[in-house]
Image (cartoon, rainbow, N blue to C red; front, side, top):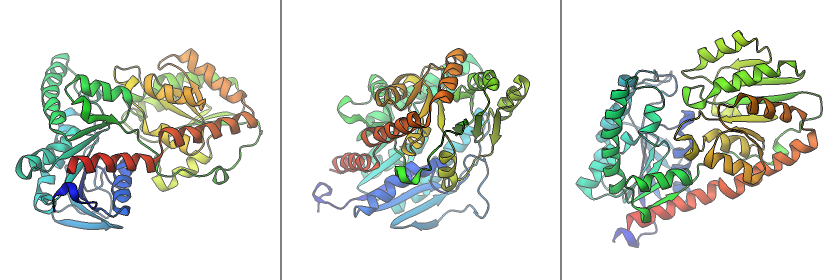
Length: 411
């Protein structure tokens, strides 16, 4: 029977990340959601290693590893683990997964369509080859816009190297996007940029990332008027988040009794941020190690507000950090130190406060204003946060749209 006549599809999901890695929950929810709708879904992914730069304890890398995640068949392939700040090692990390994924060619050759979770576009190297060999269409879900996310991370130190990387990557990305049956972006601004760079306008659209667990208001413990306010940042402590200004603003608020800041996570900038907090005498600020996704609900439950932050960089206006979805889905109002699409979502839903990145004075003012919000105000902002998720970040509607795109591509 022709592919276009099938209600049932054979779908391959290609992603460098998959649970137990926290970074893998979006592709996992896509795979599980599609399998729950009756499709035959297999995943090609790496052995878990992110963000530690080492394979997780209890795992041993080898080719031919197959496991099952409910109805989803998962093929894991070896990878060269790395999470350092050295460009060469990170390139090897990405390319090693792309090369290893080719070992699954026999298993995926009968797929009707391939969904590529493109945190790194190198994950699409295998699907590009499968399209050439078997005419299997691929759909890209672009999570990070390259080359800016690479160059902006500081991995390429020299200006000349950055210019060369930009020229080479843009040429290859244009071919990658043009060859896709459809390109999904995670923000409207990102979709517009991809079209400007060669993605076909009729085959480019937006699916905003979503939160997997959206607890009801009853599941979130109430926060009383005990005079305390806990403001949490949970996520990657890296150079792209612009957290220096956050630390400086938090230190200025040391005069406010009951106002506490918690940074939960790890990353390339963690040690430097700790040193900065110590140098500024930010006694109201604590750092905690990253926690598993299963333990994140407790982190959200302990927060009165959560910080969503990006550095003042060219790509920030068209980026929607995943921590925004997590906070809002858990009913936590946010202090959004972001521009562009993410700021518009928060501002339009009255789900918190929006301030420009890098503006220490404005961030300090937002922290002080958050501390002054009473329990009724926090309850209103919490309800608004959940309403934003229902409108913009609903997982069921997102899977509906992805399934529709994959079905059209398979046809």
